Image (cartoon, rainbow, N blue to C red; front, side, top):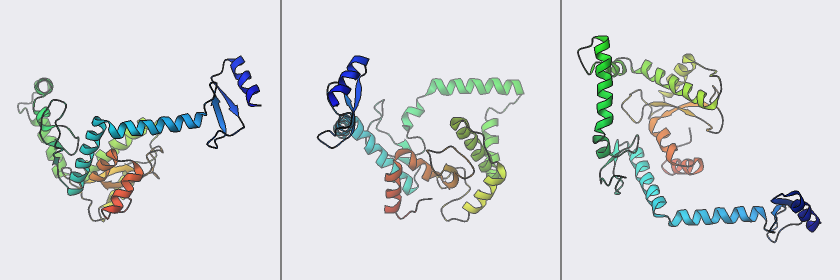
Length: 246
């Protein structure tokens, strides 16, 4: 039966065929025309890729940087040192929020100059004399109305996720206010735009689209840590440090 199925696949020009007879490892499924089991080939490829990543110096350095960043997040620091040079060779500290090298950001003169020229044109159009007007007003708004600024920020985050997930947002400011009021009663969550413990919007299940039943309020460091870890590893690490899954 195997030979007839293989011959039929060859005649039809197909690369694989189904065989009801299990392979030496007990897999029942598709086989390649050459005779190899497709599941066995996939498992061998995955094993070889993991072995290469374990020996790859770039992957090792990336995992070391991620570990240093996670420790800095849990310690509440804003900067961390990975002990490794950046892409431009700087042995400098990095920002916890973005992972970018501080020295590299200082040398982005062309980008900063373009932003400065854009702001100057905006100020000239609006007849604003102070060049720091917009940035200063934004800081004052966050400092004066931290609660409203946090709600606005979370609503923009939700709208961005809805656009990515291609769904219509089924909640608004009222639900965010309710969740934020409940979250602020939990120790470790504050309303401070300049703190890693400030309230941040998070999806309970990243595989599902954003909705009113799939959101929660967590500290900002929680979201930052989830970016570097797999879900199961993240839950295990949080349990190790004494945190429960939110």
